[in-house]
Length: 87
Image (cartoon, rainbow, N blue to C red; front, side, top):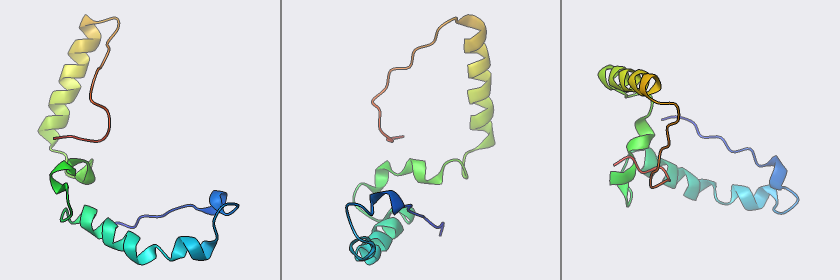
């Protein structure tokens, strides 16, 4: 499992280290649920495997499409739903 780190030194004016650390067990459980894709909404976690499990043919297709669009366009606008959903 990858290690997730949290830099909390900038919030110590608002909360104590003890207050932050009391959430460690719960944080570990949530991280494991996301990493193992076992929690609610696990069908929305396609981003967890990026970029490690990205198919090389997909990357090649994206690069070819990007090249074609650069050649055919002066301006390119992307409109999407936002967020991290990769359905």
